[in-house]
Image (cartoon, rainbow, N blue to C red; front, top):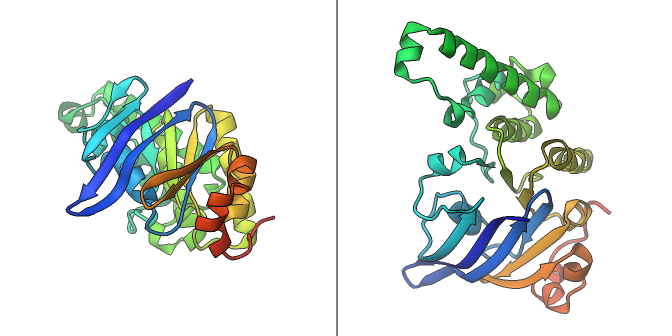
Length: 259
């Protein structure tokens, strides 16, 4: 079953075409990667899917609903979570507070409950805290639970973003360059974490990444973009051995960091 269908998606900024008539699907419960040279349109694609950019034309069907035109908060509320290439943590909040903040789109109690501390409000707060703690433990950051985010190592801040994304209890999660700046061992840990996310939560994980060794190890499906157009699509073996992909992208990259 496909949880997301991208149909004839197009994004244009004046005379610049960032994404050109792109169509593909994201199967449920799979790990999928979007690769391509810098400027190929990868992050623009993520930004359209998650509502930060409005497509010039085309459809994005998520779980049966066309989400084009919806705000990012509305799309998050439907069950779509993401991390960002540039970290977006709240630096002066603790790890626990950061992850709890990610659940705001799932809360139901309004201003009345917050002001008067109704039983329903207290129960909701307890649930939020419980889910946040579970997600922090799941990504292996329980020893950082009460540390201020700005005092975390860089890699831990990336894991904090993943925990916050998981806290909304999503139907799909998008990771934008999650291994950027990671050491070899940190990348190995990330490979393990991505597999555990898919296996525990039974949701698709879609990532943009430049480390081809990591891509090869985690992906079940790969989409290759070049100048905003789909160059190739298929399994890692099919895509990474495609002469067009090698010419356009792989041949220009350094040796894989994870083999």
